[in-house]
Image (cartoon, rainbow, N blue to C red; front, side, top):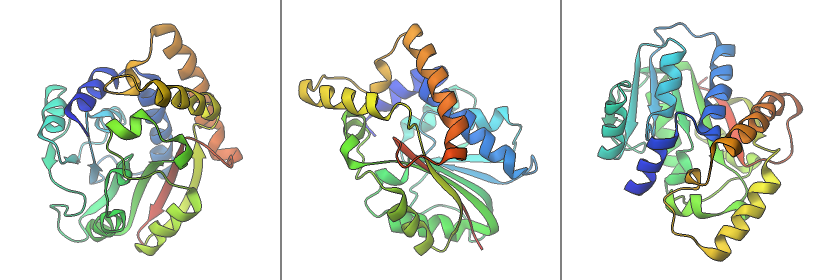
Length: 243
């Protein structure tokens, strides 16, 4: 990502509806796994530390991050989050079979060789280890956030999970989420694409009232998506396991 995008995320991730809601969703998924506090966890693509914030709040102590950017490393260190290593998801500086849980949330879409990234994650994980993945969905939703985030693609659930399986993983569950806001986000991105404003991230288009409203909608979304499994959404969540 561009440095300005890291900066925008760092300034907004603590309170912005998208990051707050995602942490609630991921926290629920991890709570359902009932992993011990000393689980060895690697957060791939730590960026400004939003997942590290969640993992600390959940009481996990054996956590490290990984990111390509020294800026991400700096932002995380300033917030007092877990150690963030500099490295590439296509060449993770970890030994084989050494990690219990990997989070790669909104990361794989940044990598040209997404198959290599998933295979490298598979290599580092212990047998029986878990992988929590999220990626952006539907190419028709391509917008400013994809451009400033330097995304390579957006996915559909069936083809994405086929890629995850090809890398050796078993899929435990997978579903679209952020489906309630799919239409508003689609329309907003069409408008933004037409006017092409110079902004570092879509997260800066916000205020307290809008943030509160969108958070309420998003929480209703993430509480229901796992149950009703909607046929569309802005993002895909996949929980996988190394057999």
